[in-house]
Picture 1 (cartoon, one colour):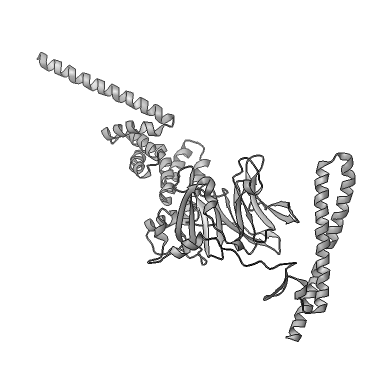
Picture 2 (tube, rainbow, N blue to C red):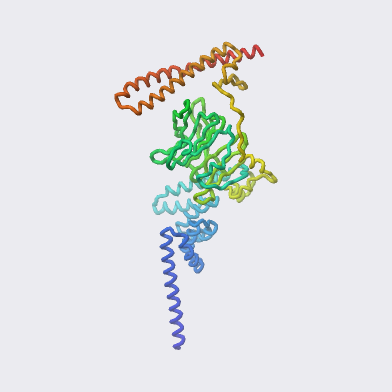
Length: 477
């Protein structure tokens, strides 16, 4: 009897010690968890959930630890178990997890459940309504993922991504902001300059650190006439990394406005008739992702394009993707959803390749330096008709048309001279005192009036020159 009693006391002691150690382990794990030290807390929660697999809290805590340490597949079953037992925060984490896994419909479903639970408790739901909108938009993108061939990818340091872009001369050039402007400080943007070297597009931050895109033109040997692009591009949220096609009107850029994750890629076009930009269009998948995607660049001579993304990369790295532009923007049809997710996320670029295609020559071409054709020496650019463009007065065949266009050249020269004088006077105005400014202001106003009076004069002479030249060509050829 005494022996049995001793044995019971011993077993009870072991149970008490075990429970005490378990409680101590749980308290330590919860402390680490609440401090955001998920990697350190995870082993303890793993042991606890294995001992008590039906415990909703253990499932939730361990699932969150797996999620926060990047083990997304491992996190799912534990968060699902916690959600089945109505652990409120499990729905939020499942919503975020399924976005990472490109399972956007399931993400939206969990965010809706989480929002309903918050609303019942009269808690703020605005942040999670934004997440829900992202999941729904991403699902629409996944449904329409483009059939594009991504033929190469290169992982580089985040500050060295431009080393991968090898543009031919006719596509212009892209330079880091600090290198182009010989500036110092943390300005993380690029400068695009067209082939002629007379226009640049770039982004720079304002006093609040928000990036917007600007344009400048070259006046003699100086850059000037800085203009901020309009509000339908610069939305008040970070907008950056512009690139302009050789047509001079199509501009690609990146923005965090209405994105599905960090920077997203957008395209718009300049309408010369109204001097406005069309409503920007957000590119689809696989170009855009739930991560940062930026600097879409096309080399029309090579028939290739690049963009950079930090998807699936550590914090200090990015991946530059090389692709064949999908001119028809055809979509993937008939593939299973799992395959679409791979194509959309670019978790494997081989999934985008055509059967038995050999891309080796294109990849070699992509990284080859190609000089453009010698540029025609242009005094001006005068479109006679759809097939004839003149660049010098000597090209005119009609003496009358040449005389008309000489007036156009002279008027344009006068306007250029006035613009240059105005630039100098405006710079002086900024650097002088109030008394000196009075005289400068009068000179500036006088020149501005002259400039405005000249604006509409070249067009009628240009029209006369075009009609005279076309008539002459019709009669003599």
